[in-house]
Image (cartoon, rainbow, N blue to C red; front, side, top):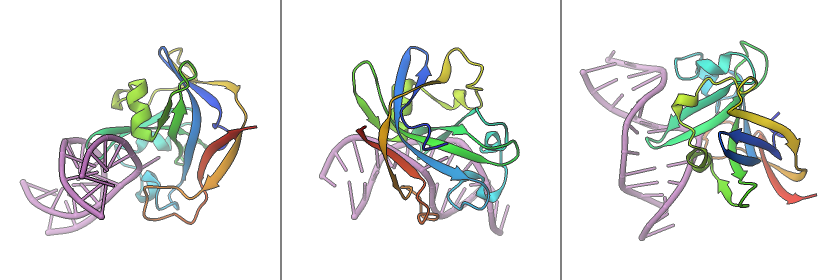
Length: 154
DNA sequence: ACCCCGATCGTA
DNA sequence: ACGATCGGGGTT
């Protein structure tokens, strides 16, 4: 799912962003996953249905946007790490920066992006060559190649 | 109630 | 390489 989201377009109000970079966080056995130590108020959305937004506050000043994947009860999410504004071609690289661009905050945690007219992922997709590397900004779980990044247009 | 630290980012 | 900045969550 993390790989499939590359090239798709996030629509949030009047802003759009082509997804260029993602990371996967999968289940309670993934030490880098917020759900690794069980369900808490913060990560509870990860334990619900796929297709919901998981937004959390980090480092005292940033928000990060994820989309929930997998079946209900199995916590997994895709972190969105980079987008391009299709209007201007401007890159927003980094999960905190792209949330600032969209205006995404903790208020948007738990939104069902499958039935919202304001916040959804457009299925039309640009095709990219995709680099696969270890996830960054984490201390455990770096052996998995769960970071996906668009490199050049095919 | 306390304390450590984080799926970050800008500046040096 | 490091500081800013603060809520979450594990521990007491």
